[in-house]
Structures are given as C-alpha cells and as structure tokens.
Length: 235
Image 1 (cartoon, one colour):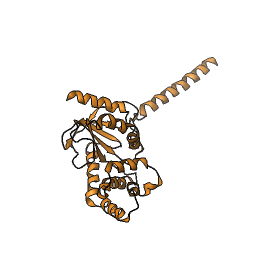
Image 2 (image 1 turned 135 degrees about the vertical axis):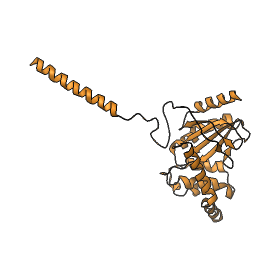
Image 3 (image 1 turned 60 degrees about the vertical axis):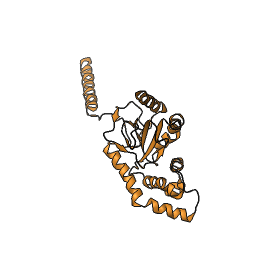
Image 4 (image 1 turned 120 degrees about the vertical axis):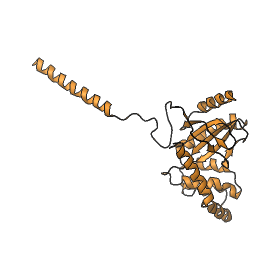
C-alpha cells in the first residue's frame, strides 16, 4: 500500500509538474504597456524617433529659442495625460520652460475610443480665433475631464455664452484646416509607431523640425529632469 501511495503521489506530482510547465511555456510574455492610455511602471527600452517631426504652427509653450524641445502627443480625454498635466508639467514649466531652457510643443493624438477627444483638440486649437489663449483652453480641458461639460468641449473653452463667439468657434472647429492639422498630427504619431498617450519626444531644438528620444507614458518629473540635464551637457 505504501508503494502504491508513493506511486500515486509521484504520478500526481508528475502531472502537475508537466501541466505547470506547459502553462508557463504557453503563457504570453508580460506586456510592459497594457493600454493605449500609457502609464508604465517599469523601465522601458530606449527608443529614438525615426523621422523629423514638424513643429511649425503647432502650439508652443516657452521660448522658441530654447535649446531643448519636448514634443507631446496627447489626448484631452486621456486620464494619464491629465496626470502629466497636473503633476509633471508644472514642475517642468517652473524649472525649465519659464527659464527658456525648454520649449514645450503640443501635438494632438485623439484616441479613437475617446468620443470627444478630437472635438476637444479642435476647440483648443480654435480658441485663439475668438481671442482666447490656447494654453488656458488646454488647461481647462484637462481640468474638466470626465465631467458633464465634456458633452460639448467648446463650452469648456468659451468664457461666456456669447452667441457670436459660439458660432465662430463652432465654424472653426468644423473647418478643413483645423481638422487636417489634427489628422496630420495623428499621421506623424503613426509614422513613429506611437500608439498610446501620452508620448513625448525630447531632444535638442532644431528650429521647425524635431527629433530625439521617445518617452512613453506619464513618467516622474525626475526622469524628465535627468533627460534635460543630459542634453544640456551635450550643448
């Protein structure tokens, strides 16, 4: 009986071992990025842009003569983009943008499953057509993320219910020029195999073109600080 029991235990253990090995063998590799809204929690491979990104006529925060440029591909409905806006960008602005060390460029990359992202991008771009500041609208859109006003992103941008401004803004948001600008941003992101937001390209400034290291997801301020300081040492 003892021998039979041992044989049974041996067979059971063998089956479990084989089954476990099979599960490990067939299990898919762990993904570093699980969502198009990117917030990686581990180190990622260093990547560099393959092409020159056009920054001409895009929204710029900071001096155009700043030696370092950060291009942001972002979505106004992305929660991790909001996290970057709320927690990381203010520190970059205070320590580098305001000191004319970094110019920060926004590129629209509205994700297809965010119903209001593209209209929010259009509303931000068109805010200047009614005398509003783009970056104020940029900030308002992120602060209002997820609320009922998202049914009409242009309501977030408008500072009043002025009918004339409302009609002018709506016309601008539906214009071929604005929608084409957003689509070109999306094409640029696709060319660089960018498939989630936020994603950044950081490098030395090159007038109206830009290339550099790709930073995927909302990352700590310290990472951006280290990248900026490394680039400054190269100047």
